Length: 510
Image (cartoon, rainbow, N blue to C red; front, side):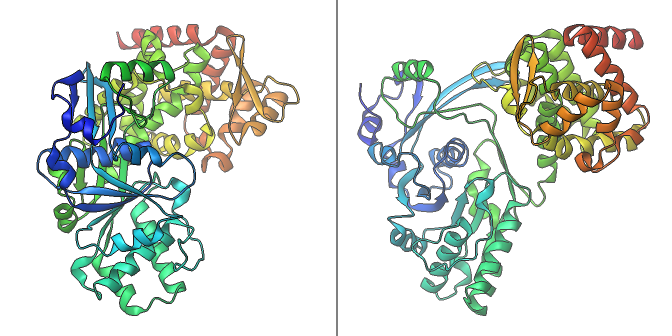
């Protein structure tokens, strides 16, 4: 079986294995993007979207990738001429989606460690317009360093070196500034990166002229990316896909159908990032708070308030939970009846409902194995960040108990019960099987469960302002309902509790 490369792509018949192959013209496009990071999210979202636009004659630029770490095998990109297949599998509007695309947006991959001179040389290219990054959340941090090192150790240091080389090459020409688009999953990622780069410029005494150019000629954009890109599938599926495609691809990447790349920017940013006009899922707005709130409160918030109940019920993955009638109903109503009205930001109800239905389609994706125990990691911190503001805002609007939130919270308290005597790390048990409680607050809850009754435990946990930033027992009726559901889960089990929950809801509605 042949290995994916440029020769194979150019000779492959257009209908072969239902693969979208690149045309010869795509390999001749100029290099317009410098990208820090080789990970699957970048390949499955920004690089994929740039490829999509290039195929339609828009943007018309390729990506030079900088590999900053020693992990992974960069030679796979060289062997495959930067080509890789994205196998899109998912559900949209209730219908299955299957698509295979050979992406050609990446022109070359450079090692920061051994090819830093080439990176700085590309910084001087008149074709360069855009910088993209995904260096993980810890990548955007201030490191006090000399940016003339080869290379600087931090990503902001590397970026500053690139910008300084460009400033010098073009003698401070304001038209040669870049649009910088970090995709690291932290709020205000663009603003934070800009602040760090400016601080580093001052510490390195790069001069007032450069600092003025840095601030005025370059655009640092806040962004939000949202697409599940698991990367290379498990061995059996990987072998099956390669058999279907008819070639070997070391960089083959799985991706869900849904995609969002929200970018905060003005008309200059829109003009440079012209791929937004045709690439599905790219939106450029002067304010992207709405997109961040919908994702954080509805998608992430639903995950956080569902993982405990789903796992205690015996569902291993999100998809399995959606196949359980009562759990699927709980997730649907939690998201759209309790969390949507509580979003602490003005959201058009129809837009919120539409986003929620997209989330449910994504949860049902039969090709993704999204495990609840992975979602449960650091669940206490996630609950505080994602769900407490929604709960407080719900009370401000309705001054009533959101019952789905209360049941989810009660299940979370039960999930945090440590069943391993003397265990240093938390360990719970569900359906006769142990599970790890990977949460910094596992010890705190182990202590509560060892000393207190369920009523006392619920009250103590809910009033702990160190956990939530607020005393949640002050919300009328919330502690009572959480305690009631916690008792029910303990005495009757999650399946009977859910069944009774919906029986009561139906009776109240009739």
